[in-house]
Length: 255
Image (cartoon, rainbow, N blue to C red; front, side, top):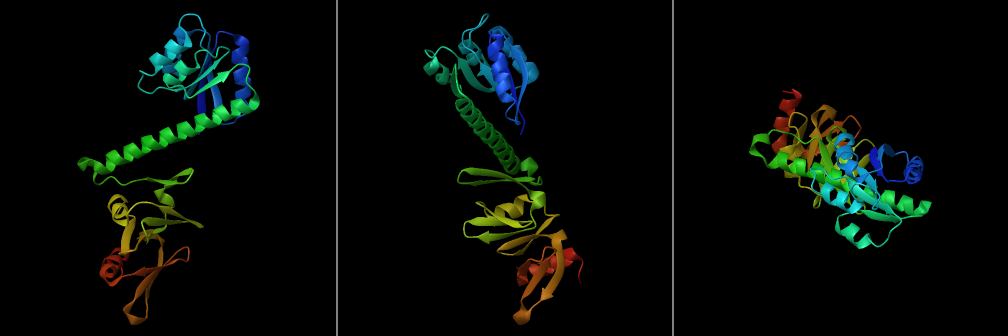
């Protein structure tokens, strides 16, 4: 994820200091600078930055008023105030600023600020993707629209899993285990939900506890006691129940 920033300060040295500090962080890119508060809105519109480093005391319009106006835009950037005046800190946070760097700040404090911004931006992107997915699966017009990404949350971690990487799925209590190349990840969702919202041209239910990607099947096995299974291309063995056997054989073109 590349993070675009706009640096706003009426002092050129202050702008250069922030830009130079950002060069130490490969994810971050300064896409523009300006020295007046009344230029910020137009620059945000044209440059579409993810983060704005914003001074408070500036000609034209002070940083607090700029922040107020940015909150009314369709997609407000993350605001980080950078200023020598600490008297406005409370008001800055009330205006939804993520952080408040008081000049002079050290490298550790600057790094902590960037880390907070990265966490927030990741959360925002994930929430946006979740909303898009929710709209897809809940809109009757989109009932045939298959999910392409699965959002997997765990303690302190959010993973975006491409459905294209999933070889097969199995139930594990209240979770579904996503089996991929050399790893398996638990996803808190029901198998019935995934059966409904994954592409049925790619996936097929073979047991009440499992689904497989059809293209991954390399063998169909008839076992003892009337049991069945498939061997996938990665070597995994997945049981097939009697109630799903005929549909699977038909899909495989086996008579």
